Length: 278
Image (cartoon, rainbow, N blue to C red; front, side, top):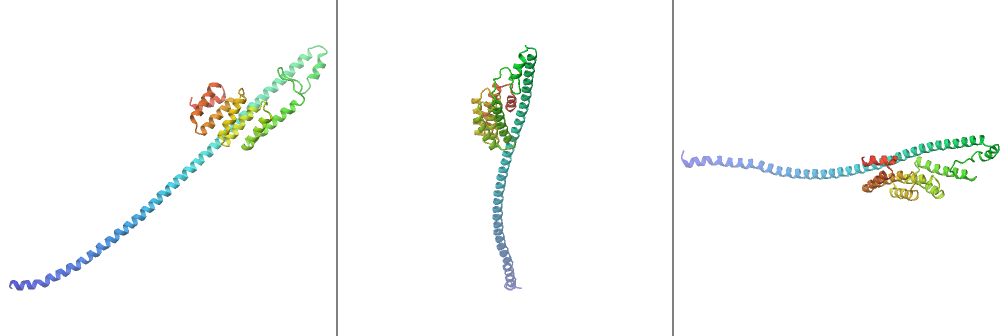
């Protein structure tokens, strides 16, 4: 076969090959088009995922912040509970001290009466009649005590009732009423031996209400009005507690150090030392 015939015979084969290539390339173009669509969809999905992640992150932050608020609320509630328990502890301590004082006073009163009776029995014949008039119930006075007028006992009983009523309000958690009652007591009986204690418990009731500024003012008034009172160390300790609650840590430390320096043997000073880490 000549060269021209061979080329004519190969022409149909080449044409078939070209058609085959054309048809083969068509699916490739289709596949390429499908990949682009898939990429677009993937990008859309990624965008939605990013949006969802942002929303989740925002929700997580919100939940965390709410959790912190709840935690702070719990802390504040615990502080209030501690203040209440501290007040109850101090009330019990005070009641124990008063019971011991009443026992001592009763003992001294009985002892004084017995001494007077013994002196009257061993005296002159005229002494019993005069002593009998002076030694009737409620009339005897211990040495160094001022004579009381007939209404003196009633006045003291009224003071004690008013004080006890205010203290009962504090013990039952009626802090607002206790503050008003103690204030009224101090105004009515400024010279009463119970007035410093009334002012101290007023400050404690304000502390229980978280009125720390008011409590500091009340306790400082106690320090200035009754500087020789046995409640002064306790008032200083309460002031330090209020300053700590207000975040005034340096001032609280100075108050505690002042308490320890001025009243080193007091129970309040022992508590102050614990807070100071001594």
